[in-house]
Image (cartoon, helix red, strand yellow):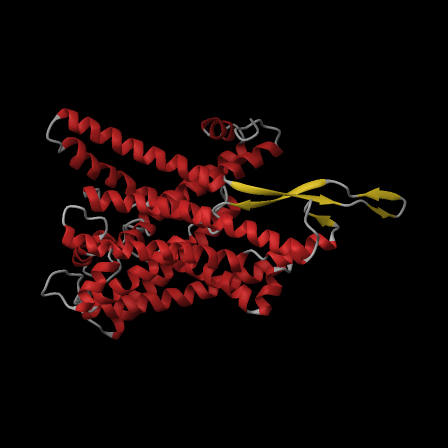
Length: 445
């Protein structure tokens, strides 16, 4: 990895792209510190301190949400819009045609994604303005001027970051939106590492316990990263043989190929979907002044919110509180369900079988047509289960250490998956550009 970056700096074009990306990220960081006019940021920060279930959403924004800066929405509306458009391409034939229509179709879908991003930004910022205003977090209260100012500031910030991400993709090292997302997550990690150090190393009862705490923290993080790399790169290759055919006076075909099926076919989408379903009721209840509680005096709604709250899971110190870990079981089931659901709408075995048959390809030992579709479906279902179990493990480990040992950090398994995936993909893009210029790099070795 370091050799790839070092060699990239030797190429003027790549060096300029890296510097462009670097300065663009500085702009992102500056924008995360600029507060929205008319907002009592200190009160909102206190609100997020009490809502630990919102740590993941806050981390995706680089902490700008709790500071209520102009980048408070960040690129989350764009991510949501991209997922919605991707799902609609399966349900709406017109969008499906655009998806298959090559470069022009993808440009049109990208345009629809931008429009939907603006719409979502307006809706989300308006809901936040009204919710915060009713809680007394807006200095002037819920007035037309204060709400419009709030909505315009957050929508403009989200639109600017969307544009900046596209500029990084075109003029920088690529993966603009993903790099901004990764940068937001990484920007919060030093604070989390310092909190872990203060609690388990510096705050240990003796030197031995502190040393053990440091070793465990490093081992867990390194082990998680290695596991995520294996999970991200793991794939099942299905061999495909193409029959020979005559074109003119030449015999073509006869080569062998393979269909790569990723183990983690759905990526981080299942975790995002499941986390959103769990956090949405807590957010709405928080604006209504209802907090998760346990005990005899708690209402049914408060106990239900306690089940949905990840901070209530894996509490082994109090058996009365451990029963709320039932939410963890539901969470795992949702992860598995969304892994199958998302893969089923993004990967069509029947379409692949039809395309293989048209091109004269077949899987050795499997007849073309429906038998090929059934075989691909069977293999895919087993792979999805393996990937879902691996994804569940990655998501649960931080939750377990948080509940059992009080290791509260804003980043979790999802954040690590995003970081590792973006780093690997960016390195591959840099490497491909280096190979074009006849430079020897990391991946080729």
